[in-house]
Length: 473
Image 1: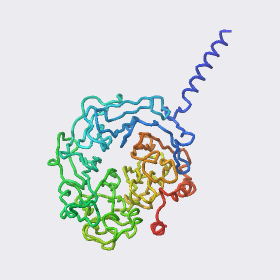
Image 2: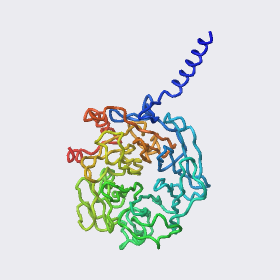
Image 3: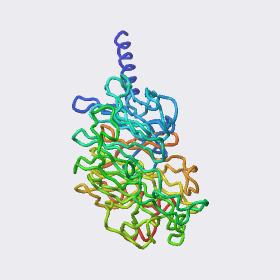
Image 4: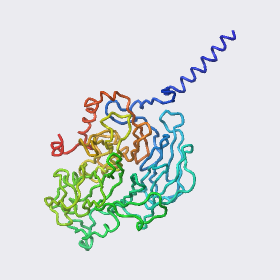
């Protein structure tokens, strides 16, 4: 009888262990966890072999994210007032879902474009619109101790395109975007006593370029810096929200938001359709001393040329070779808001060192449908693109046609790589976070697995004009 009781106790404990640790396995005497995607991948469409699970349904309107080497997630909220502008998430039972979610941030929120959240050398760096902060992380603690240290302060007032995106090289330097608040440095004194924007001229030389419209470099370990302590690294760059360092070739990369209102400013040269599909968003390899030509030029990815802007004498035909060109022109107005080079080993080899881009989606393509709202991927070889832009993750928009940006269910915003090689994707409207994992056969991953995403390129929010498709096929 006693033997039977002992057997039942053992069986009960064994079964309890099985049911609470169904994702756990032992490899090389270490506990690892095999995750499974949600039944519908959290609403996402992905290439064959990929799955997604929802980490959280939402932490609130947010911007960029970072994932620590222990799996903790940090999110920068999009909030203009109060304190506690950050969110920390922890998964304690290793099921892929956040079960601890805490707000923190002992600093004043100063605008809705506080954007960045990155981890570097054990510090959590984040930005409001006007200040770059950091705090030392402790892997045993979800919330960093102490008050935030101030790295750099922007001394100028809140303005449009005020996101402070960050990148770190391998020599203690931090790169910070100081974007320009206008489309083309318009000189509105050339249009007195009228509300019309037609034929407005651009200021020359553009005074904004004295401090803005470029990338600045600072020492990441020096506290309390202003612009006087940094040095301008590159200029002529209108608005970069996605900025990162590529360790494979030891270079800075960014994705730039192209200008708007070509038709509004020069309807004699640009149709409403051209206003919708021009100019390119720019994928940039940014070297010290580069000048990308803003506001005097824009990049035309149909012609693969840098064109003179109409405010400075352009007529949709005049081009120039006086400025740096992007390594690739991206679809107009898709709003690339984050950039990540994949360095993990979980995904198939074709993704290694390639670029993931979160496209926040357009707002001003009327009278045509809005576009973007996807996560794209560009394969790389030897530090340069080796293929065209392809759709990696879709389903954020939640509908086939978007007349207005507000109709989009989600807007992809932030990207981060987890310690196991998972890809984390956040969106800005509700703060929902997905974790993308690969569970297929890496050795046999190919065109069959990608083909399902190629079919999604014909939706109104992803369709490329035929003239572009003809060039890349």
